[in-house]
Length: 185
Image (cartoon, rainbow, N blue to C red; front, top):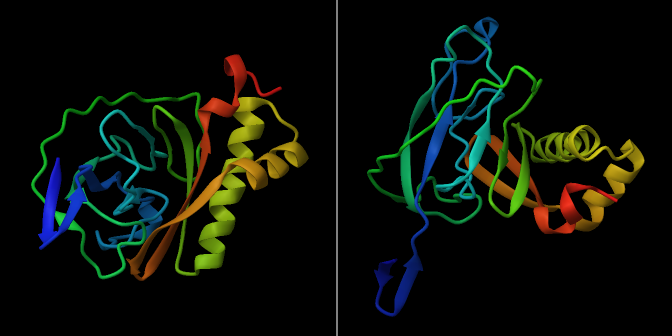
């Protein structure tokens, strides 16, 4: 499937919802739906396609999940405030994971584990994404913090998820294929 941009330009379509999130902590008060945060929201992460699991920390009773902002295609960063916008319908499954204690949204695709960092400062968003990857590798793959930090440096790819909403997004992706038989070593 492709979209025609113009003469001789075709864009591969990879539909995803740009915004999926829960209510933020009550102490935040009312928040705009435009910038993402610890509640997920307008992540604009093009890796979150069908078949992906998105893990979101729940901050209020009932979570109050919202979804929207359908994209047929988008470049990392969504640099001019729009993607190839489209109407989407999705089938979602919700599972409450009381065993997970997350600070920030995470995801898992068929091929990779993803951590996310969100902040008005791009450097700080990057720091959060990397620290979250280290925490993931320590918690899930049982690496020491030093080994997790080194593995993140040699195997995790960082991408700018978005720049357009004032709040910057960075995600770190580490391929599942590097882990043999589900063990880290």
